[in-house]
Image (cartoon, rainbow, N blue to C red):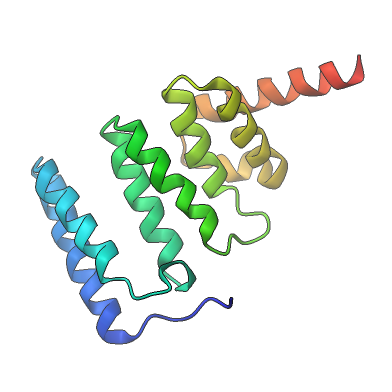
Length: 150
């Protein structure tokens, strides 16, 4: 299905929720921030995964839970990124998912997603991320390549 542009009135509603979310988060009101993210997602029209803002919103929700160390919720949202039309070479969904798995202790899945990110975008995909994720992905990629060559 082709990605569609959100109608202006829905875009405006989502932006309003986004502003309220950021304001609540800035003052440390995590419950209110989470509530605004929920309202933002509920305001997305169906089919939720095929709008120009779908992937950005889902990523923001996954990152919110990641920052709160709620890895179960973060994983749930990160998996939904793959319901969107992921552009070729877009390592973002693989990086956030790999980070969640790594921090939650699931190294096998962290390796799967982070090495995929390196294959898709190299170091460029990790720009702005904590360098430990790129380092981890590069080490695992070398180990996998070494194991394959032996």
